[in-house]
Length: 196
Image 1 (tube, rainbow, N blue to C red):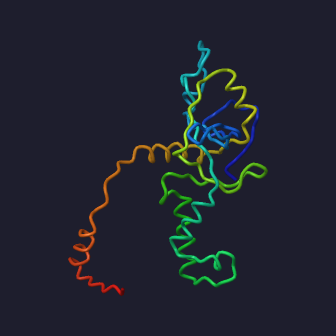
Image 2 (cartoon, one colour; image 1 turned 60 degrees about the vertical axis):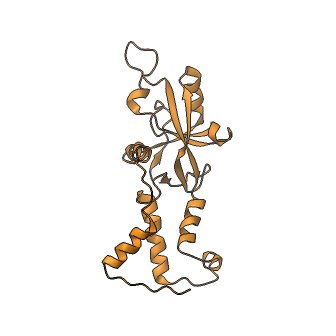
Image 3 (cartoon, rainbow, N blue to C red; image 1 turned 30 degrees about the vertical axis):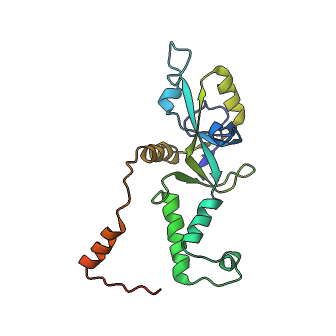
């Protein structure tokens, strides 16, 4: 498992907390994970505060809507989802492949999949778009120690900030016009005739 819980440890990067209020989500509390780098959280000798004046959190959300989106892409019916209709082997294999790609970060860079923590949340995803920054104070640290439910083991602990960094530093480009795709297919002598 990727989690452990050691209440004697100091607050650290990728600790998971309950009841973190996210202003961008109407202030509603949810589970959150601390993104602030470990080196900025340590209080060095001769200092009274850490280097980080602000702690950055991201929200943990239910994975269901993401998986439902994958099911929809594959046109898997409600009957197939409920188990009242058969699903062909190729569609099932494609489903497994897309779920693996999601888990490994090959698709949907906005999210980082995390397994359930019993008595807290089911299978979930870290959502890199739901952010909250809280100003450092001793009261914050005390509150975080009370709200912490788990720590994440290495190498997942290192992978989460790297994935966040990759997500937040993407360079977006516009889609190519449809004519480009048509020209590509023509150049490869691919003549598809579509039915109406």
